Length: 253
Image (cartoon, rainbow, N blue to C red; front, side):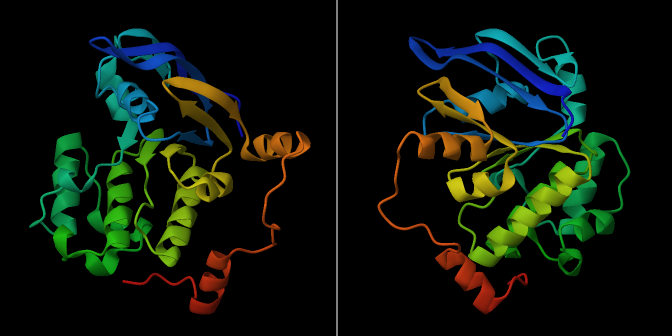
């Protein structure tokens, strides 16, 4: 992992009237890593990401994305990032090829739709409408749209929520492949096992503040060294591992 800072957040504050949603958050994301922003609902992580993505104004603080200040160069930042849209962001009656062509027009670039669909194993759904896709297919297509402009950074907001075990594990592989191909990934998730598997480092956010930033392994080791013991013996596999082993890892469509 390279130690070049591709995102730098310093003393970020966001107020909504008298309510302070983000209370001086600071962290760095390094180029080529998968960085997790974790926290309970209402912790401030979504607000923080939307400010980094130039979708929401901040109250105070400094944010640099790939060398550009969010206040001065939001257009340059938009050209360098890919942001996962929720379902409401797509025209349900357009097929996947048409949707990719639409996004290409918005970006002003020329990308072959089949090449994008190949990246997320959706070539056979090229003529299918978005509304006809399964949950896993919709998430994969959503990730494909983040890659259209060949971004330096992609932001994935709870990408595996509601997916079955096969789809979840295969999406993990896809996210890892995206990182291995040179794109920095920032992810939010409520699944701690997911963050443990995928993330090089995580920031735990609670009540608008960063509680800790470290690698998952270091955090776990520190807790264990403090004398913490789980009530149930930890086994070398989980029930989900059993499920995957017995039913296979193939995409279930």
